Structures are given as C-alpha cells and as structure tokens.
Amino acid sequence: MKSAAVLQSLCVLLLHLVGTRALVREYVLNITDSYLKPDGIYRDGYLINGTDPGPSLFADEGDTLRVTVYNNLPVEVSVHFHGIFQKESPWADGPAGVTQRPIKTGDSFVYEFTTEGQYGYYWYHAHYRNYLQDGVRGTLYVRPKDTHRRPYRQITNSEDEILEILELEKNPYNLVLNDWYKWDADAVLARESDLGIDPTCFQSILINGKGRVTCHSNETLIANAGPTRLANGTPRYDSFGCADSSSRYPDLNNDAAETPGHSSQCVNTYSDREIFYVNGSKWMMFNVVNAGASFNLPLSIDGHDMYVIMVEGSYIKPQKVKQLTVILASRYTILVKTDKTSGVYNIRAASSNTGQILEGLAFLSYDSNITQPGDNNNGEQYQNIGGILLNSTYEVFNDTSAYPYDRGVRAPRGRADKTIDLYSDRLTYVTYTLLESNATFPVAAEIATPLLFRNDFSDLPYVVDQDIKVGDVVDIIINNSEDNDHPLHLHGHSYFVISQSEDQHFPYANIEKAINAGYPINFDTAPQRDTYMIAKGGHLVLRYIANNPGVWLFHCHINAHMMGGMMIAIVEDISAVKRLMARKDMSWIEGVGL
Ligand SMILES: *[C@@H]1O[C@H](CO)[C@@H](O)[C@H](O)[C@H]1NC(C)=O
Ligand SMILES: *[C@@H]1O[C@H](CO)[C@@H](O)[C@H](O)[C@H]1NC(C)=O
Ligand SMILES: *[C@@H]1O[C@H](CO)[C@@H](O)[C@H](O)[C@H]1NC(C)=O
Ligand SMILES: *[C@@H]1O[C@H](CO)[C@@H](O)[C@H](O)[C@H]1NC(C)=O
Ligand SMILES: *[C@@H]1O[C@H](CO)[C@@H](O)[C@H](O)[C@H]1NC(C)=O
Ligand SMILES: *[C@@H]1O[C@H](CO)[C@@H](O)[C@H](O)[C@H]1NC(C)=O
Ligand SMILES: *[C@@H]1O[C@H](CO)[C@@H](O)[C@H](O)[C@H]1NC(C)=O
Ligand SMILES: *[C@@H]1O[C@H](CO)[C@@H](O)[C@H](O)[C@H]1NC(C)=O
Ligand SMILES: *[C@@H]1O[C@H](CO)[C@@H](O)[C@H](O)[C@H]1NC(C)=O
Image 1 (cartoon, helix red, strand yellow):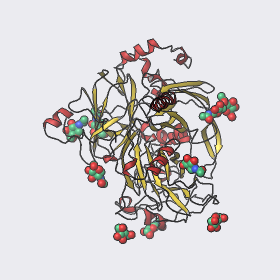
Image 2 (cartoon, rainbow, N blue to C red):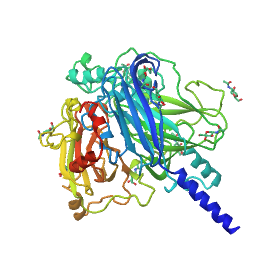
Image 3 (tube, protein in one colour):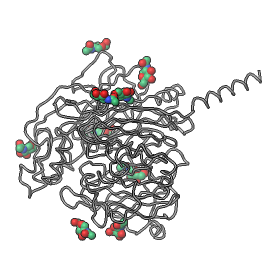
Image 4 (cartoon, rainbow, N blue to C red):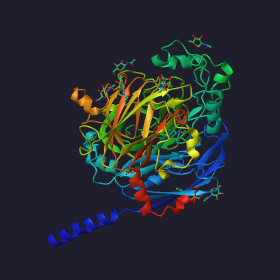
C-alpha cells in the first residue's frame, strides 16, 4: 500500500513536470487589407487572418511564442505584444523606429519571446502609424501556472464552483471592445496633421468586432449625457452622438471642425452583434480588453454583477461591481455568475468621453434558440447609452484599490536610483508632449534607424537616457498640466503606481524628499499595471525595477495623442543590449532593412 502510494505520487509529480514543460508555440499571422462592414457600413480596413480582432493566441506561462507576421497590406506595419516584457528579446517589442523597421509590403517578421514570469491577458496590435484602429489587433492569453495564489475563495465557498472556475481559466471568453471610425487611420491622421483637428468622433463601438450604427435624437442624447457633459451648457449633438467640436474649437470654422462622424448622415444599421450562450455552467469567465483608438469604455451586464479578479497580469482581491470602466488599452478578467434561468441580457460598452455619447451592445443569452436579439432585453439596466450609472449606489470598479493578490508582489520601498521627471501638456490642438522641453516624438522617427540599434541618443530630445543600469529602481514622476486624462503605457515592464492624485501635482522633486516630508507614498497596496490613467491636473508616480535592458516606449495610448508626439523612449542599459545582441544571430533582423 505504502509503496503504491509513493509510486502514485511520483507519477503525479512526473505528470506535473511533463505537463508544465515549456513549449515553443508557433503562430502565423497574415495581415491583409479588405473592404469590410463590421457595423453594417462598408469601409477599407485591415484584417489578421481575415478577421478583426485577429486570432486569439494562447500560451501556458513559461512557453516561448514564435509569431511570424506576414505583411500583405499596401502599407508598412509592425506588431507590438502589449504588456509582454520581451525579456532578453528587446528587438521583438515591435514599435517601428524603436526596435525594428516597419515590415514592408510582402515581407515578414518573426517575433520570438518568452512568457516566463507573466500570466493573464495581453493583446497584440500594430505599432506603426495608427493601423491598430483599422483592425490590426488580437489577443494573447497566458494561462497561469498552478503556483499562483487564486482569489476565488473570496467569491464562493463551494468547492464545486471553485473547480469549475479553475476549469474556466483554461479557456476564458474574449470580450474585445473598440471604438470604430468611419474613416481609415491614414485619413484621420491627415485631418489631424493637415487641418489641426483632434478627431474624437466615432461611428460605433464594436464588441468582438461586431456592432451597429445607432442614431439618436437630440432629446435622447441630452437626456443621457450626464452632469459632466452638460457642465458647460448643453452641447449640440449630431445623430451619431458627437458633440459639435466648433464649440470646443471656436477659432476653427465649422467645415474644418467637422470630425469623423460629425454629420447628420447617421443611418441605423442592423448587422449582427456578439452573443454569448450560457450553457449550464454556474459561472462564465471573460477576458476584457479595450483595443480601441481613444475612448475609455464603461462596461456592464444588465441584471448581472461582475467580479473583477485579474488586472493586467495580476490576480487581485475580487471586486464585485455593476460597472467596470475599461481603460483604453487595459485588460481585466471578470467572472459572471450565471444564475438566471432564461432570457437574454444586454452587455453594454459605452463611451464616457465628453465628446461623444455612443454605445455598443453584445448579449448574454440563456436561450440557445436565440440568434440575434433586439435591444430591449431582460434584467436591470445599470448604465445608460452615455455610460452614466443609473443609480449612484451601484458599485463601480476601482483601479486605485486593485493591487496584486500575491503578497510577494509589492513595490520596492525607499528612494529610487533614477527619477525621470515628466510633465504632460497639449501644445496645439493636435500636438502633445511629455517633456519639460516640450519635445515631441516625431512621426518621421518611425522610419528612421531603430533606436535599439544606436549607441548615442544625445541628439534625440524625445529619448530619455539617464544611464539606467540593470537593478536600478526607477521612478517616473508625471504632472499632468493638461485638460485631458491620458492612459499611459510603458513597454518592457509593469510598474507600481506608488502615488497618484486626481487634482494635484506631485509636490516634490523625488520620492526621497516626499518620504522625508511625510508625504504618503503607497508602497504596500500599489496597483501593478502597464497602462494607467493620469487625471487632468493630477499626477502619477510610477516605480519599476530596471531588469530588462532595451529601449522602451512610454506613451499615451490615445492614438491621436501618440501620433501627436505624446511619447518618449527610455534607454535601459544600452551596453547590456549590445551584449545580448552579440550573443544572438541578428542577421534575420538585418534582412528587414537595418
Ligand atoms: C493564419 O493564417 C495562416 C494562413 O495564411 C495559417 O497558416 C495560420 O495557422 C493562421 N494562424 C492562426 C493563429 O490561426
Ligand atoms: C495571406 O493571405 C492572402 C490573401 O488571402 C494570401 O494570398 C496569402 O497567400 C496569405 N499569405 C500567407 C503567408 O498565408
Ligand atoms: C436639443 O435638445 C435640448 C434639450 O431638449 C434643447 O434645449 C435644444 O434646443 C435641442 N437642440 C436642437 C438642435 O434641437
Ligand atoms: C460550457 O462553457 C464552458 C466555457 O465557459 C466550457 O468549459 C464547458 O465545457 C461548456 N459546457 C458545455 C456543456 O458545453
Ligand atoms: C426559445 O425557447 C424558449 C424556451 O423553450 C421559448 O420560450 C422561446 O419562445 C423560444 N424563442 C424563439 C425565438 O424561438
Ligand atoms: C438606488 O438604489 C437604492 C439602493 O438599492 C434604492 O434605495 C434607490 O431607490 C435606487 N434609486 C433609484 C433612482 O432607482
Ligand atoms: C478607490 O480606492 C482608493 C484606495 O483604496 C480609495 O482611496 C478611494 O476612495 C476609492 N474610490 C472610490 C470612488 O471608492
Ligand atoms: C510637479 O509640480 C509641482 C508643483 O507645481 C512641482 O513642485 C514639481 O517639481 C513638479 N514635478 C515635476 C516632475 O515636474
Ligand atoms: C512648453 O509649452 C508650454 C505650454 O505651451 C509653455 O508654457 C512653456 O513655456 C513651454 N516650455 C518650453 C521649454 O518651451
């Protein structure tokens, strides 16, 4: 008996070892252009393997991914794996002009990287021009190792349900949200650069690449606008829900100020929307990403609470909420208790931007015989078409209190080795900076020699080179002097948000001075993110450990702002990068034009 038990546990151990052996997973992505109508209206767009969003990639934590991207577009492109550290593979990060040349039409590029030390939901998208918003995007889910502490006992005591949830973890549903323009990215960019207009109006909100155009009356729009949008008087809305931008840009004439979508030509469409069927399981798990160009998107499911359990690669203490504002480019994993018996329930994603009232719908259906429901379905509605909560007592997700559930994952305490001082400001309608010098990241830099292959950056004002060495604790301090909120994304790392304010600048030159003055710094419960909002007039202090030699972008993820210059590159131990390159055969990368 005893030896049988020993043998059995040996077998389990062996199975475990075999089962968790890291694989190399090969994926091929083929980017093509197409004439498509995801919301019922035709336009040109870019697809990966024929779809937007493109294929959902999977890995088990620790696997290596080798992703070959074929560019069959009429334009150049490159692909960034958002949130992936690219440890010891900084040349696979993707941004054109930073880590590679854009991939030419007809060429291909191989992105090879490990997922060791990372789990959860990521996404990939174009990082050249704004082609992500034309459809060059998809998701990557890294299944967590068994060793991570799960938070599920915080939401149920039932062992059966916990087993069910652990099973769901293997293959969660995708909930990919994005705003969708009626014009392609190059046309929008031309309006920005030629007319000086920040294009804030969209045509629809898509969920898993599906949606409809829904036109509203002026009265409906005003009734759903909410207090913030009405704070400066009643805006004039077009039937797409776009606020007339001539009131915001009084010195531009109306024709010039017309932003995409801003017209009276709105026509309702009736194209298919995404439907998720409840198949008898007690819970459903969704990976949620805002893969759009501009808007943060408040999300809710009529009649259903959402339990947010993971944010950008960390389990968190679950938050039971009626609304989750899905920040642009951010990822969240939610559990939904599917405890109804029949009916269809609306999944709503809406714009909370002051510039537009816009909603997209998908459905959660308990009836397997329903194919395309109408808009009026079951359950209590928590938010309106403007993303406004219908009852102020409803709980909403709080990014500030969402810190890693794993007690071992905490911000390093004390002073920093390097402090990068930034400030964000808008210089014209369409140019933005992150630097005191007001330097901007030029569009032309995307086609220059990639920064990673340079040694000296002193002539490039948009590159921050503070001689960061491996092991340094780095703080990025940003005062937002601007009238917009911005989702700020760092490549190559996640950071801890150790100080933040919605209305005050950080009053010290560095954290050491702040600590000495008794200013509260959040080392113990700091959120760990790679994308986080800075509020207008507020500040952030973001701390990370320099453990990844490379040249890493830090930028606003609103496409118009990024192309408007709100981006810097941070050099991390360039001599270590050169040593990495010397160990590697880089001839394949030279093949794409270096
Ligand atoms: C994408 O399409 C190519 C063929 O063009 C195919 O070989 C590949 O397996 C597809 N990739 C995925 C992830 O489905
Ligand atoms: C990519 O798709 C295009 C259009 O379907 C096709 O002609 C081409 O052969 C594909 N390329 C690869 C590498 O699969
Ligand atoms: C829109 O509706 C508001 C509120 O009912 C009203 O004050 C305004 O005059 C209307 N505007 C137009 C252009 O119809
Ligand atoms: C129900 O869906 C879950 C995924 O959410 C899946 O794991 C399970 O196998 C499905 N069950 C049936 C009976 O189809
Ligand atoms: C679907 O099935 C339910 C339950 O059997 C029934 O009540 C409903 O009428 C059906 N709906 C349609 C569209 O067939
Ligand atoms: C909001 O919710 C509270 C608590 O459930 C309830 O008492 C109140 O009547 C609700 N208000 C509205 C306007 O529905
Ligand atoms: C969000 O969480 C932070 C930190 O716990 C807390 O200070 C703040 O009051 C919370 N915000 C809301 C709206 O509850
Ligand atoms: C942020 O603003 C405060 C107050 O205006 C100033 O004292 C501080 O030096 C600024 N910090 C940075 C990094 O610009
Ligand atoms: C940067 O721009 C701001 C706002 O336009 C201006 O106040 C400031 O003087 C400029 N700074 C430099 C160094 O040019």
